[in-house]
Amino acid sequence: MRKIEHIGIAVQDLEESNALFAKLLGKTHFKTEIVAGEAVETSFFQVGETKVELLQATKPESAIAKYLEKKSPGVHHIAFDVEDILAEVARLKDEGFEILNETPKEGADNKLVVFLHPRSTHGVLVELCQERK
Ligand SMILES: CC[C@@H](C(=O)O)C(=O)SCCNC(=O)CCNC(=O)[C@H](O)C(C)(C)COP(=O)(O)OP(=O)(O)OC[C@H]1O[C@@H](n2cnc3c(N)ncnc32)[C@H](O)[C@@H]1OP(=O)(O)O
Ligand SMILES: [Co+2]
Image 1 (cartoon, rainbow, N blue to C red):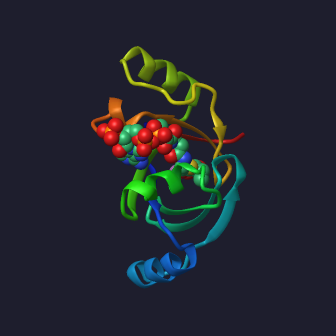
Image 2: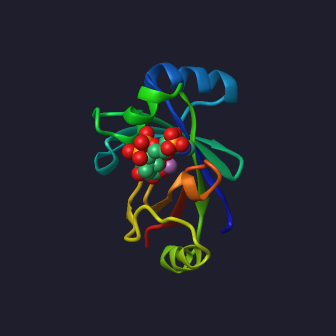
């Protein structure tokens, strides 16, 4: 794992959260994107080498909507940048981590992504991200 690619934050209202994080970070988001497969709309802020990813659900069955049914808005996952996502999945599986999707799926910002179940990572939802070639 090379660096923290982004920190994912679950929000109820993307527009309101964009304004709040713009004030907090002193800059505006550089893009928004709908990721239909995850039923989310995202926005990204660059912070040094890493990013803040705000996530609003677009459907009730979205993982973000389900999360916000039980918990308050806040940090939802940590995403690590990896060079070879399949090699990293094989390594982490061997180490006993629970992989949620062994086949990488389409993420935001031109990435392939894999998630690890938080019950195997001391309660932290972990995302692996590889730049799409
Ligand atoms: C924009 C695309 C992409 C990117 O490119 O960056 C994204 O970031 S998409 C982000 C949204 N997508 C996902 O989160 C996909 C992966 N998540 C899942 O598959 C599910 O959310 C889950 C983690 C398997 C949980 O789903 P489910 O089992 O249906 O929910 P429960 O409410 O029953 O929770 C079970 C258990 O897990 C705990 N939990 C749930 N979410 C989180 C979380 N984000 N962080 C920590 N813990 C989490 C939940 O509290 C339950 O725990 P117990 O009560 O102790 O059983
Ligand atoms: Co993410």
